[in-house]
Picture (cartoon, rainbow, N blue to C red):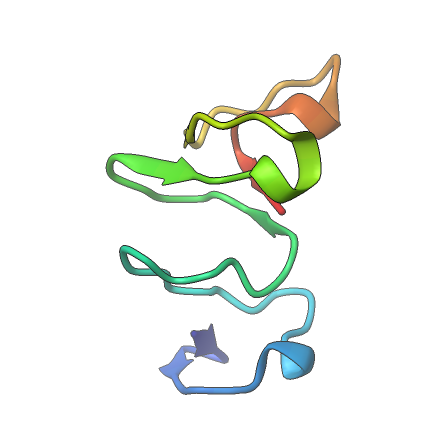
Length: 74
């Protein structure tokens, strides 16, 4: 993760608003996140939604239904 311009490692419970979380393939999402930059990003939300397919995530926000926005990860 990046905090105050420096890349550091912290426990998921120590993540705060403003931190930039860097994810790599196969990692779990440690907190609710907004995607600000990505390349071929897919998430498995099956434990939340029951959907069996991975869902693509993009940087584009959706204003009318924030919880369904493709730039949000849970």
